[in-house]
Image (cartoon, rainbow, N blue to C red):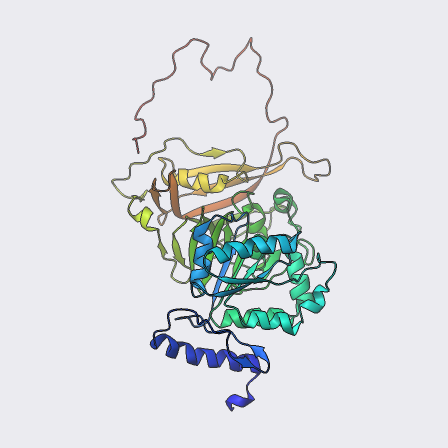
Length: 466
């Protein structure tokens, strides 16, 4: 087959793949100031220096602060550095141009050249479906090195750029950018669309866990798939306890790997590698060895494996190797199986709301540095909704250390920060008793409580100081 007979998009990708190593060898180290070469009347981007495809997918967990310089500067660096050209796609936002302009300013502060694309069903004066096919907007993407999807409602992104599962010309141009080594990033809704399956509208995490209701086109939908077919992505993850909805989706759709990205935090995904940047971390869920009991009438899972990657950590999905941040390597390594293990915590962790704000990550940090080998958490409705079909249904989350469980600790970030590898997780349905508690009768305190004024039991073997 001759080069001339190849499809145009494939021909461009092949040409770039051949040219990038040559450009790198010539020492190209900055984005060229020229606007690119015109082909068929369409402006083409200059190649990203030293970079051949595939590109970088960067899901950001939402609530990205505009002063989070680590994330914004890294995005520009990945796209070639100062002078790199970006387009902002504000399709998901409630105020598209306002949100888009703030994102553009954050990227410009790091040296990027940025343009906001006016494409959204919220822009009454425009036709979003027509804009997704506009040669002028397609040309702007083809001249760019990076694309940023704003947060908001992710269904607007897929409905406009991929109606009925079919890519529009604008989305095809974004894929060409990605295949050529560019950066596709997004926050909140812009992170949700990164995997091939996404949550469309399933905000009640406990209801998903209880009912397993995940209908196509309602609770879940097709995503755009920039992280590849094997990895699932969810956002606002630790803040909103979304492990409770991630696990049922992964089981339903057959995913073995998933990442939950926390707010104000980014996950740089390229091929089979991930790096965490920003304020906090990412939860990695591995269901390769997990199983369910079909005899139980509600969601259940055994032998899931979970890892908490903190900021600065790297992980290879193919080899399973984690490289902690320099701060962690300079801090304390934690191996519960070693003879010199000196745990900081003594009491078995018990969390009454494992789906609470950062509860799962905090429990993992406690368990890896604990005298005990297990931790327990509950997920249930303390005050059930009126239409809750199973008000007494809850779930036990049992976390267990295994032979491959490891961790690292550092105080270098100003707090107590852990990286935790390879804890096992079982999720079991349980029946909650009502009421959960009753007022105590002052005349007859429980025998297990010391009488008023009685000396407390002495504390033995206190945990060592950090």
